[in-house]
Length: 215
Image 1 (tube, rainbow, N blue to C red):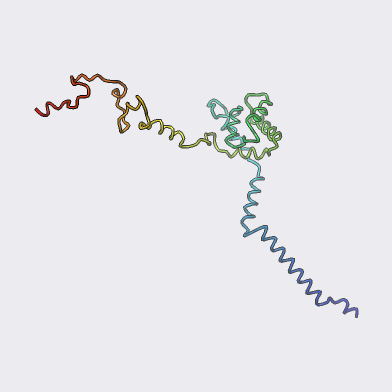
Image 2: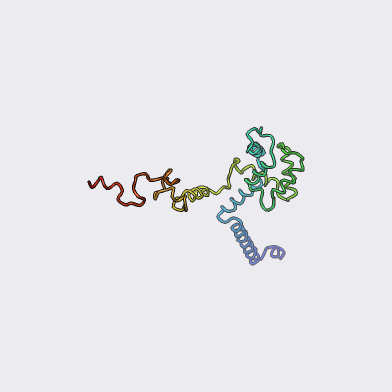
């Protein structure tokens, strides 16, 4: 009797197996939700790693040197002005609705110098980030990867459109219109000054220079 009581019931074994199978199925579904086809999860992981990766201090320092020479050919690349800093931060899109040039001006002047060294500039950024509640690494990462100093926000083609409009002679009026012929070619002095006709013919005479051809 004791041996019979110790042996599990057949139905109990079946129920236990059923529960284990159900649990395995649920685990499989959760894996699929977290990792559809495996690709999105890998991309998300890579993105998180990239976001968490600290900015290269060497790359940031090179950018500091480049922008410290922007607009100042005599600069040794060791000091940065507020104007150069704002240019850099605008190009890196750090200056936006949350961080303005007013904010940068206030924090820059706290260091009581017209030009900041690389070490002082890092203090400036640290103070700015804490005050505006922005991650310092995020700011420096943008600034390290914004490219060389230059005009990146210009609208190409705008100047060309303006030039084309101003040089379209068909739209000229008044005395300016008289300076060009139908093809747009300038008439020279004839388009700028009324020349006296000294041929001896009355103004408006239609048979000028035809006598020699008929006689």
